[in-house]
Image (tube, rainbow, N blue to C red; front, side, top):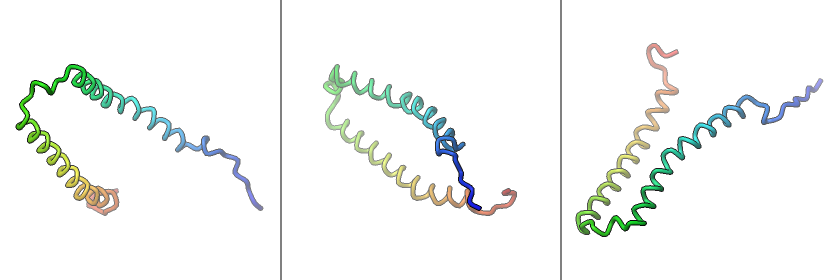
Length: 95
């Protein structure tokens, strides 16, 4: 005997979880992005970079970008396998 399941994908409990995730993520993302956009908009409008010294500024910006990229690569390379090991591994007192 074949039983047909009439549940739709939107009725599945995981669909509600995804909706809650999006509902929480969008305001959080806007909370981070909108102030940065406003800051950049204002800096362009008042030409904030005009009074800054030229040589030291570019060195500082490139150092910041290099450090950020190195930290991101190290986090991905070291953190992803560590997270996998912690999630899947068996440790003392692990349920």
